[in-house]
Structures are given as C-alpha cells and as structure tokens.
Length: 299
Image 1 (cartoon, helix red, strand yellow):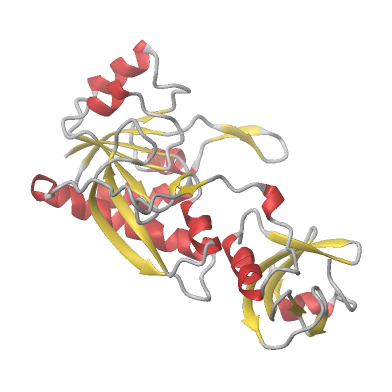
Image 2 (tube, one colour):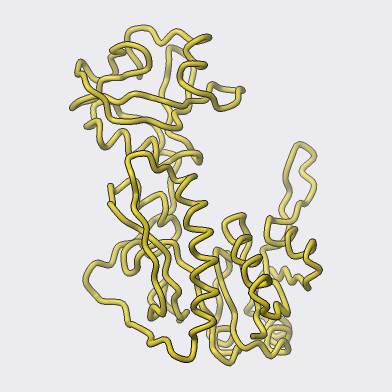
C-alpha cells in the first residue's frame, strides 16, 4: 500500500520500521517539528523524524494541518491509508478523509478504556490486569472510532510504564501490519458506550508519594510513573526518585523505614528495588543504600 506515516516519539519508531519491512511504500512521514534540546538548546528532530531520514524517506513537519498548503501537500500524496501513532497534532476532517482507506490510529489501550493522552500510565495506576493496543479508524472525536483489530497483554506486579511502553510499541507494530494485510476483510467494531474512561495527562503533582495510602496504591504509583515523571519522596533534605517497587510484608507508621528500603504505608508496606538520587543515574536499591542513610522515616 501507499502509506503516509504520522508519528513523533520513540514509541512510534518500531511501527515505521515494521511498515517498511512489510514492503509498504511509505510515501511520506509526518512528524512534529524539531524542538530545542540539550544544553545548547539546538533544534533536534524527534525519534521518528531521525529514523525516517536514516531510511531515506520524505519527512514533513508542518506546525498545523489546517492550512490550505498543508492539506494540498497531504492530498497530493494520493495515499491508500495513513497510519497514525502518537503524532501530536489534531487531524482535521479533510485530512482524515484524504487517504482512500482513511486514517488508522494505533492506540495503546483496550478501547473504550483509557481514551486520551496517557493510557499506559493510567492502566498501571488504576491496577488494570490487562491492557493492549487497538487499531482504530480515526474520526473527529477523541479516540472514538471503530476498532478494526485488538491485541492484549497482561499487566504484572513487575510491570512499569517503561517496560509496558516498549511491549505495546512492538505489539502495535505487529498489529498494524496484520491489519493492513487483512484490511478488506476486517469488520469495524463500534466502541461500546459502557466502559469509557479518559487517560488524562500525567500532572507532576501526582508524583510525590503519600505513604499514608495503601501499599498496593503506592506500588502502582511508583511503577506507573516510572521512568517519567518518576514518583518521589524526601529522604531527609534530599529528593529521591523511586523507579521500581513491590508490595512487601510488614507494617508500621506511614513512611517508617522497616529495614533496608522497605517502607511502611497506610496499609502494609512496599520495598523499593530501584531508585535514583538527585544528579545521579538510576541504580538498584542496594547500590543507593551504600551512599544514602534513610533514617527512621521518609516524607
């Protein structure tokens, strides 16, 4: 097929690679414009943009798709389909209608649960047992289109947003190749009205750990916000980012250090297994404790 690919972050790169490897003709790659980054604040292309250049593909980086020029450029591609994954711009109806088979979105949840911006984080934070990816026909509403294909995966007590991000990225790549191969025979399934939830963007205010909450909730917060933005607490006067944990045995006053890096919560306790001190790299809890005294209580 003649495919327009639309994506920006690292999550989208395996999808682009899979489309190329499957033999589709990627006639244009749309990505967010380069952003200032690094100490020198020089403009740097995003991961999809950089990968597309490596593959020798045409890259378009419009700041808006609502201009006459942007629409004309898009329509001139005469695409069979557009594949969209974490692109970052709203697609107006004229863009959605341009490809012969419309625009297909890869969404990292089991729709209609977790429509919106942060479905991976929210699934872990909520304690969902399963999540997955959906190939969805795009329409004007926020992730409201009919689903063509879905694949699911377990969320385990060891899952973090970082690990699930990578698994769902690879799963999305497999799913879109399968969907395009079967496109004429797939039956769009409208999303049910029951079970709709919205995955709001993660606010950094959500990241501070409240040790008075139950251990299961604290554990999900730590894993659900790892690696970004990272749940954190204060160890004395130092802010420490907590990157992995597990529910543990033992109890005590909220925030009490029970031994090692096991901390009492409002109900039960958690053991921190990976953390990051300010200005240092992430490391195992054992390595962190070699240079940091937790004292009797964390806040």
